[in-house]
Length: 190
Image (cartoon, rainbow, N blue to C red; front, side, top):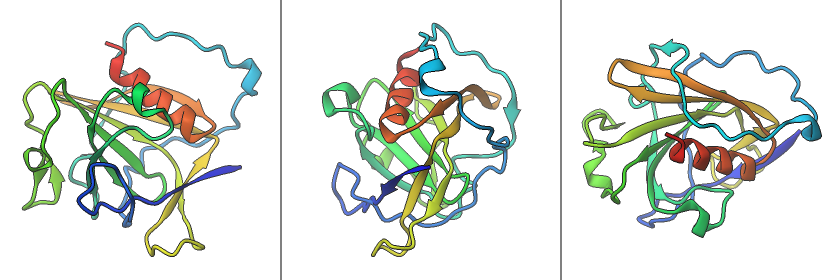
């Protein structure tokens, strides 16, 4: 099992430096089966995403400590990331990452609901995505609330529509690089 250490500290920087706090995940993640062999996975281009199943979990507000920052997607080169995204993270297992995608760079003050410690869900023209990824507490880290992604993992991808959150994709990832590529593919596949 490969692990990738997350350590973001959100100290006013546009790039995530990490200090993650615990929160409760959706609890919706299905049992993880063994991943297929890497060579047996056929890489396919997804031409459209479709709603499959709806969840009642509120990814934007149900985390007791949602960490919110602005930065580029981890695991891909900055030139591939194509922008500064508003992102959020909730831990622990199963844990999830949120990306708010817009064509314009959003100031963080426009996306935080400070009264509820949530992400605002009313940003005009924004698409909201969630990537549910298993993680575990990193007991060796100096930061008290540091978590590791657990790979391989079957990542569940959700998108927010007018009537709620829907599962739009499930895909195996084996590294933070593959997770970064999945995030980019999801953002730019319409």
